Amino acid sequence: MRDFVFLFGAGASFGAGGILPERPPLGADLFPILQHLFPGSWGMLPIDITEEFRSRNFEAGMKLLYERHGMAIPQLMRDMAIYFIQFRPYQRRTLYCRLVDDLARIGLLSRTIFSTLNYECVLEFSMAEAGILLSYFDAGNENTCPVWKLHGSSNFFSAQVQASPGVFYSTGVVFEGGIQAFPDINRVIGHCLLETALAPVMCLYMEGKPVSISPSVIQRVQEMWKDAVARAKAIFCIGVYPLEADDHIWSPIAKTQADLFFIGDKAAFDDWGERNRRGQSAYLGARFHEGYTKLTERISKI
Image (cartoon, rainbow, N blue to C red; front, side, top):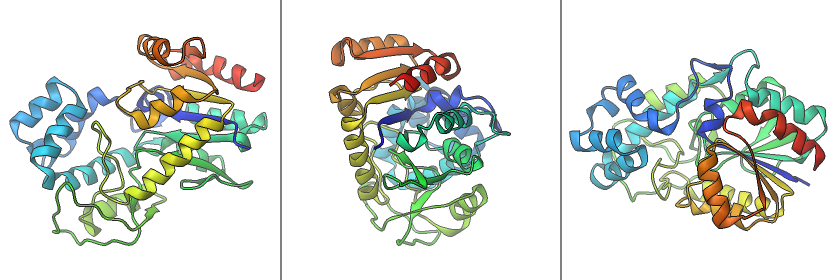
C-alpha cells in the first residue's frame, strides 16, 4: 500500500541544494535564461510576445505564443528539454538524495509515491544514484518506486511516432504513440538536435497545460495520481504554488481526507487552505531545507 504521496514543484528543486550546473530556476526567471541560451529560437520571438513573457509571467507569454505562433512551439520545447535535462545532483548532496535515503532507512520508501510537476530529472537521477529502480507509468512493485511526472518530462519522447527534422506542425495537432523515457543527458540532447521534429512529451507551461505528444499517457498518469491522492494517508507538497487554475492538481488535494503538509509560499498556502481545507493542513516551512526536519518527523509518526 502506497500511503504517502510527495508532490514536488519548481521551488523544491530550487531549494534542494547540491545541483549542477546551478540550481534550477523558478518560473519567473525562466524566460530570460532561455532567451540567452537559445538566441535562434527563444531569442527570436516577436517583440510583443517577448514583452508578454517579461512583463507578466511565463504562462501568459506561452499562451500568446500558442495562439499566434504555434508552428514555433516544437522547436522551442526541444530547446527547453535540452536546457532542463542538464540538471543533476552533485555527489548525492541534494535534499532529494537525503529524502530517499531517510525514507529507505525508516522503511517507508515502499509505501511512497513520488510525483513532480518539474521537467528536469534531478529527482530521478538522485534515486538512480542510490540504486533505486523507478517506474514512470505505473504504481511500481517491490523492486521499483513510482515517480509520476504529471506534466511530462525533458526525457520523455514519442515511442512510436517519428518525424524527421524539417517537419513542421502547429497547435491542435496531436500525436499518440506511447512514451519512451531516455535514460541519460546525451541521448536527450542528441535526439532533440538531430533526430526529431516532434516536441518532447512536456505540457506547455501555460493555463490548461496542453500537451501534443502522447497526451493519453500523461492523462492516465494524472488519473493514477488522483486515485493515489484520494487513498493516501498523507500528502507532502514541496515547492508547489497552489494555483487553482491547475484544477487537475488542486481539486484532488482539496477533496482528499489525507493529512496535507506544505513547504512553500505561506501566504498562498494559507489563502488556499482557508478556502479549501480549513483546519486540515500543516505548514512546515518556506523552503525545502527549512521544513525538511519537520517533514521527516511528521512522516515517521504517521
